[in-house]
Image (cartoon, rainbow, N blue to C red):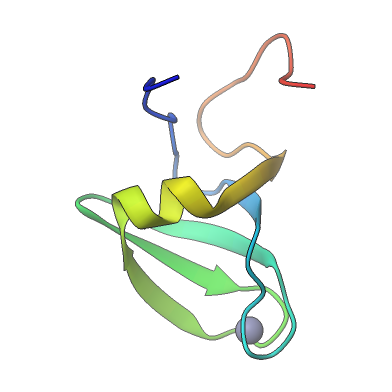
Length: 73
Ligand SMILES: [Zn+2]
């Protein structure tokens, strides 16, 4: 269960916790120690420590650069 999630730039993810604007869907724009993501509801850009971001992911809606086989349902 401790496998790192292969986040990639361009991923569209749904987070467990809603942004203050009510949106839960984010586009990943930068992946490093921090993850830079844009809220697709209000277009605000935030930087979040990677671990915290990964823990908050509910599901991937769309994958960016990393192709994914055999979904996670
Ligand atoms: Zn927002």
